[in-house]
Amino acid sequence: MIVCKFGGTSVADGAAIARAAAIVAGKRDRQPVVVVSALGGATNDLLDVAQRAANGNLLVALSIVESLRQRHLTTTATLLDGSPERDDVEAEVSAGLDELAHLAEALSTLGFVTPRSLDSVAAIGELLSSRIVAAAFRHRGLDAEWVDARDVTITDDNFTRAAPDLPRIAAATRERLRPIVQAGRVPVVGGFVGATPSHITTTLGRGGSDYSASLLGAALEAEAIEIWTDVDGMLTADPRLIPTARLIDRIRFDEAAELAAFGAKVLHPSTIAPAVQRGIPVYVFNSRRPEGTGTMITFDAPRYPVRALAGKRDKTLVKLRSARMLLAHGFLGAVFAVFDRHRTSIDVVTTSEVSVSVTLDDASNLEAIVADLSAFGDVSVEQHRGLVAIVGAGLSDGAQTMAQALGALGDIKVHMASLSATGLNFTLVLDDAQVNPALQRLHATFFPEPA
Image (cartoon, rainbow, N blue to C red; front, side):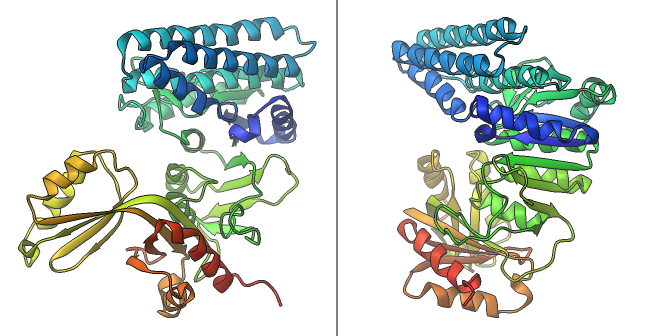
């Protein structure tokens, strides 16, 4: 049994969904379970509907609803031309978008968006796309069955970032998915979407369709999880920035997780965890070039000093300086409790005897965080910072690689540097505008073009 996840670009329109059907048809002997994202860009439109409605722009919100309706119905008509199911699927799509319009009207009356209501809106994309994909598969000769993701991906009620309930997911997949597979059919499930045990709709957070695939793959003890996207696999850098970036044929789980967490767009950072726990290999393939070899993510990939580079921009650097830190027991624990209290995650940390510096991805609670930290000492904030991550399992085997990295940067100012506890990620904090030039210099150093 395998899990095949198709991202938004791989189900963007009728042609993309037809390609996905052909890919799955070629894997029938491996008992595929299919997980799909919303049609490319649909989730952004759905979130826009919620925000505009809550802000009092109901007519604009409803016009976006109608645009989504037209797009989904056009895709359905293209895929199901001549199918006896076409009318039923179009009715289901329209009903889903009618529900969206009602939600928009309710949010307009309410005047603000709650996390719970935002999940109800955002989930519509995957619920519609998975219905369309299942019907398109059947029309192309695949015995596919739509499964409501809310019946199998059981979560807590932390809306917009729900945590999976692994025992309940395992039980639900045994009850709902495994019999479909054993009967020779292909289950089609929407990613990203879940539900509480009382069946209130939740989502796993942006990019959560990869996470859904990994959770279901782990629950089903799949032999492999395949992520089908619009690139050939994981590359040594972002090809939009570095056209000479190279395909990585095999990469270790821990390296891939670091790259995903530090900006590599191919995988959602949480994707790796359930697969690692079960030892399930993850493959990344290009749905536009299914004949490609892709990238295999596994435990036993070769060790390299540098496997790939990644960058993140729009970071905030927070520095706390306090003489009270010197030999003080529990001081850092109290400092980090501030970030926990404000539900703000930290990317990079460095400490000295009297100071601690951290970078933040989400600065929405910055004012409150700074106010609380001021009780411990002097706080300064630096905006417009970026991160560059140099990742490799053999990175810390010697000092040469890190010295090469710093030498390659030349006159680019480094505000902070941190070697991860695992020794496979050397992270540099730079000015935001220097992230791209730094990545270009580093790639030329560690992945030079053949002479």
